[in-house]
Length: 134
Image (tube, rainbow, N blue to C red; front, side, top):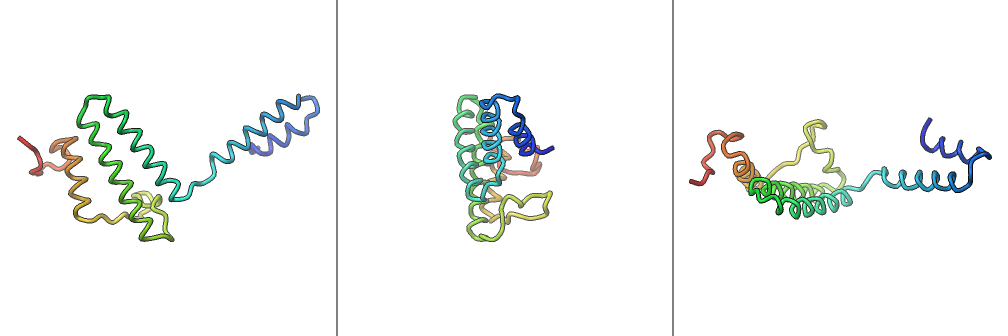
């Protein structure tokens, strides 16, 4: 039985107090709003906010490599924003290996991501990288 059907069933039960039925209905309303699909723009705004929150939390770790993930998050948001702007009839959120849709990167974006990953993992991901500082 779906959640909406449960609320309707509760509402038709005269033995339940009205406050309980009202509370269940209110909870169901909030649930429906929470699970509605976001627009791509709403997702981008939330992603940007999450990256900012991550940065604030990462500052407190005293770990430079961990802080570098903020750069990856922000770059991903920028890439997704550019994709959505240039492809308004497509949804950037479907661009992943599971859907076989791609975000096409510019060479400077690849270089930036490479630099961040090399900083975090040294030469473990890109074994022949010359990005390590002495």
